[in-house]
Figure (tube, rainbow, N blue to C red):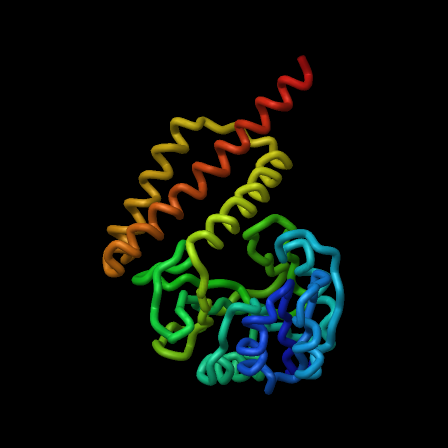
Length: 265
């Protein structure tokens, strides 16, 4: 079986960040861009780097296109990278070494951390400062299934999952964050709408009072036990927003259920 690696990247109107991402993965065997019909210069940049380009209908988030993009890769091994992530040399070496001799493993988890554009650590709702966040990003393409729900994780259908050791600088995926709170609130509003869709499909019941206390606990947990306090006021803001995310999605879901009940009456 081939040890060549295809990098798969999902894109939509990311001309401002895509070049930095591609520069860091251009030495892999193949780059597959799965684009959701961008109307900026995203595809022009992808063509400059000789990427294989496939198109998928615009859905607002990447998960519905994951399986399609992965199966569009030419090689047996796939490395999924987001357009706002940077890959450094030590991590690339670990991935190549792993693929050369995977043994009983068919997938691997990699640590991701949040960084700003000046390569300084920042706090975010997807990064724990003292507890590494492991994500499944390397796998054999025929051994994975990626559920279409927002923020879902890939499922490895056979074999074991290897955890790349978190040995320090460079052996991580850097999630590069450069935005204003105005932009982030827009994103939060959009993604909580997707969370409502997921709750509707599952027919979940929600106790908003219990959810309120869960949200408070999540804020405190992140701030005191996951290192948010190390970032001072900025860390507290991140933790509070992370707690509010769950509360807002459930509040929207209750609003949806109320409207559905009114329609039936």
